Amino acid sequence: MSRAVFLARKGRGRVSPNPLVGAVVVKNGRIVGEGWHARYGGPHAEPNALTLAGKEARGATMYVTLEPCSFHGKTPACAPLLLRAGLKEVFVAMQDPNPRVAGAGIRLLEEKGLRVHLGLMEEECRLLNQPFIKAMRHGLPYLMLKSAQTLDGFVARDDGASRWITGEAARKKVHRFRSEYDAVMVGIGTVLADNPRLDVRLSKGRSPARIIVDSGQNLHRELYLVQTASRLSTYYLSPPASLSAQDELIRQYRLIAVELENSKKGWEKALRYLLGQGVQSIMVEGGPSLQSKLIEYDLADRLELFYAAKTLGTGRKMLTLPAAGLKASPFVSFKWTKQGDDMLFSGIIKEY
Image (cartoon, rainbow, N blue to C red; front, side, top):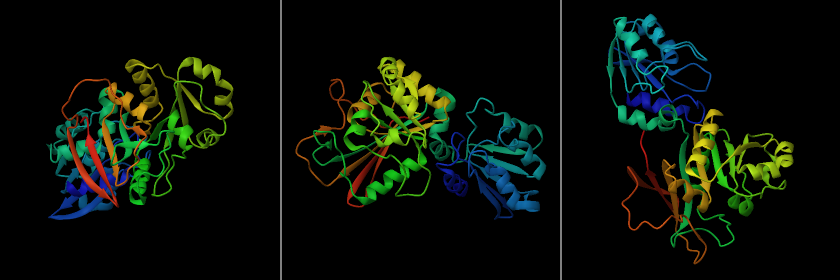
């Protein structure tokens, strides 16, 4: 199952909104076939593993990170394929949270006489697919907040500019994150201060969609994200009055307008719309006001915070939250890793 988890990770940034899945076929103590879900719309992990195993699959055991699907979507259902292959037993890490499956694949296998073992390395496989699980169970995209700050706690200068607080290794890590998320979200303050590209250049993988959050009417045609909106999906979240005032610019550059009321319910409505557009995971890169709002509304799921061995002396802090006194750590778990000359704090706020 550890090998299946390793294989599943190969699909990061390529299979959304489908889950990451890996499968391994074992016979007489050796691996005879393995596979993973490599791209959205392509074959799932199980048929890829069975194809490699060929006739060796008969009488073998499969280890798979997620319950085999039981319905025909973009590809045929996987559970019947396992039965036709003649496997003797299957180890399934976790049940599929998709209501269209939700145990139906396991029941089909068991009803046809295949032995099914559920729960092996379940925790590891749940962590593998947090965005998918949240989308299935809560109808909202997964939000990861990314930020970088100096030793004295500043994320940007007083004018909002934030380049380059961290070093090259940290910047490569950020680009790798981008390649694994469906979209990158930024506040208009960051857009105006840095005029960012928000694409993937320092790592392999595809560039994500872009999301601009603006409470006013600050968009203008000289911005890089506006000029490239026709080439890469770019969502513009703003109050209805602002969208109406900038309708010509939105239509000319083919931005996707999304109404956003500044309340928790307003945010949830906008996020549900984005999920309906296939945006299952969002990396929120800035700025401080936007990230503070998402934490205040209890919408953030994960934090990736880079600490640079630098000082600014003055500038903008990462978070500005309502006064609530000293609060316990909001993280379910966290860890520190070194990224070149910088340190990365990775904290999980919610698990699904």
